[in-house]
Length: 627
Image (cartoon, rainbow, N blue to C red; front, top):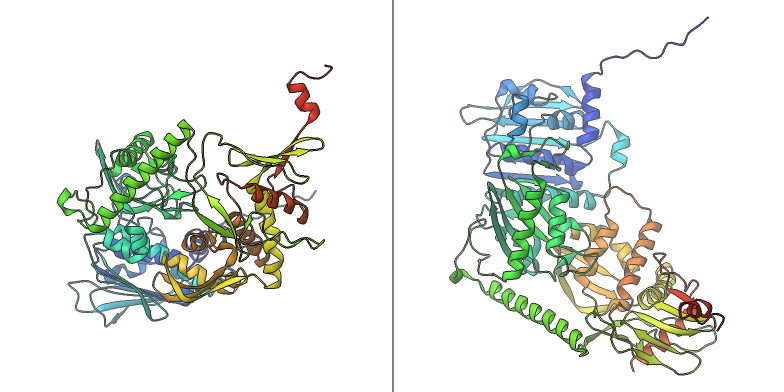
């Protein structure tokens, strides 16, 4: 009788171990930038310079003026689980550095052409070590200043499958910039430089004023809308800045949380932020915050995630209460006396208030007053005054030749407008159309009640109009005939540098949708044309939302997927919203367009546009059956 013997267990070679670790830690060039920046920051540097070529795929060079590495430690530095930052397991619960695992350099060196050169303050010479694909060279003397220089060339050159999955250089640069931003915000006392393709992207002098650094990354549009928050609770302290509720994003990428100088993500804190803004921001939008949490290191476990992004708090409920109370109490008290131009993390006195802060105070007061007036008008039945109309495009004419120029209201020049008013929590007086063969009325500024042969049809005005806009836009995108408005003077739009890079990387695709964008430098792009269907839109907000669709982590969509995703988003942006009061003419035009689309029963996201209450159902509810 023969027996099948399975493979024997064996110890993996160091090169294989390092490549496996690289797969866990080094996802893309940005991962290398993160690890090397953290090492430089931990080395007590005062200046760090980062150079990238092709988004870091061809070259990542990081130079610092820190403590340097002893020549006897060079080979240990590129060995697995070798570190100077912890000695025993007890140290894992008192970590004060950004890095501590001792895996990064070994992992990076195993999948690149790697060179490290370093010189300590008491050394007469620098020393250098080269590693290619995990094969160590010899440590040799070299010329160089105090500090450490690390070069990573041709990342993943010996793992071509991994290299094949890298995206374009603009996208990879955008991801690298995000990590650079996180370290720059966590350590504003560092002088930091970022160059790409030998051009300076950021030159950030050391500063004690966090807002100055925020302004370098996000521009005046955001920083002028920031509100100082600060709160202490026991041994914990929270401070930072939160944006005015009117300034939001489509996802949480605008939420920066730092724990003892380390950027982290935490669901407890995110939940507290959402609760603090509840009722102040639209559903589906996320506030922008920059918050710094300081607490004893033994009250948090940072050894949870390989990339050190996630942590485990000893008392998460206390963290929740701290964040929630800090933000909510600031909003409730409207206490805006803290000057944004004062030293970051330090309270200021009222006389230090800047012109920008005074303007924000006026805007917040006006915003709060409008909310109160709106609530009062709803209680007494006073109709809110609409704000100026927003334009949306005409819908294709019917096959019979009847020219429905708009699902909403048509003006003399063919432009379509719809009044935008704040959504009311209570039903408003219905808008009724009783002409022709259609009998309908609007209720709650959201639904249309239509007399139907089988009963009463209830239509979601936004869902129906979104379907109409989708079918209006889709053939034009596919045929390259989207109507766009050329600007004589391009608009400058400030975005996060990573957002700008993603948009510039997809210029051709955006052009198909009617958007023309050009590089302007830093975190600013030029908008030279936009789709007519979004004439009145906040283009900076639309472009930020487009970034979300173009650069969703964890997926690599096909061009067809991207086009369809963008079509859904732009159709939603163009469609009439819940809370918009429609005129009888607009109701008629919108209902007439139901017959011009392929699927009037569902919006592009699959939600139903209408439901029918049959006469039998109504009779049953009113006890008329058998009467």
